[in-house]
Length: 97
Image (cartoon, rainbow, N blue to C red; front, top):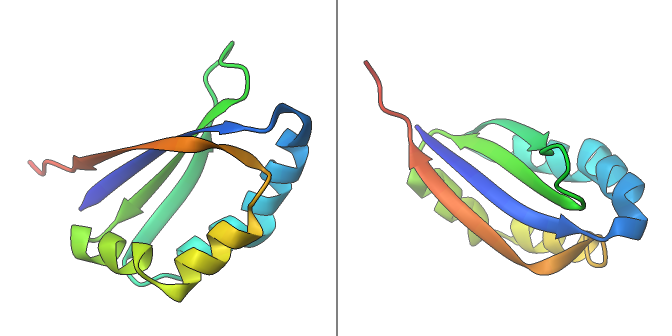
């Protein structure tokens, strides 16, 4: 299993729009992808407009397939103006007992 942490700056004037977008479009679109097991948005206190989106994937292959997909391109295009590039990505393998 793989955990992806995507750190991004959200346009400070559009945080409400971004939250609504993730709830109504972005997160449902991600959950529909093969191998996506969960998704959450995180915000550290006093972090301003910096947020993390955490996704859990069955495998790196599932995440890579999503990154290459038309669905990823469509989700990215529909979110233009809500976040300020660049975004940082960290990947973690879940270490089972």
